[in-house]
Image: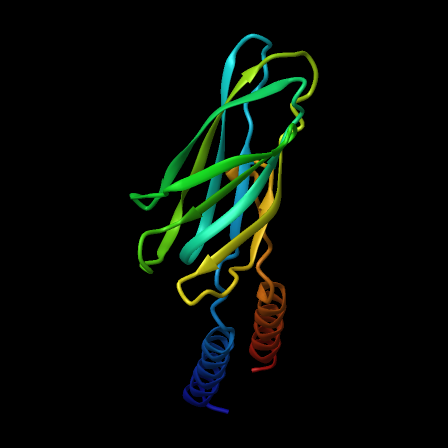
Length: 191
């Protein structure tokens, strides 16, 4: 076999492998990032005023929502709850006590505009009145979009920087890419 024929054969194999990689990546659908709502709670020091924040990450077209904030009323006293902002749009909210250990926060944007992005839903001011754990938790979280459909979200208490989501499908893509690479190397070895 001539050198020119071998070079042409290798070029063909490389082209086929490259095309297979492109097709593999084009076939994997782009996954929307999961909407996450987190409660970031500060360290509690008796006699101090502290602020917890409710942050939202990767929301699409949110128009309204609500959540319950649970806390230990023997350690914490709610002073105020202020609306935050998502991508520069202020979040108007209302809140009321459900019982001694629960506050319900509700927000609804004026009109049906919808906001997408990340930001802060609320900032909650607490007076630390006792020793012990504050037991801050979010419960009964609900987000709605401009079409009155529920927005699926993960609700948690971890800091936004601690949230790690595995994106489904990438393990399979990397395995497939690895198999294609091995195939190409084996083909080159035989040429």
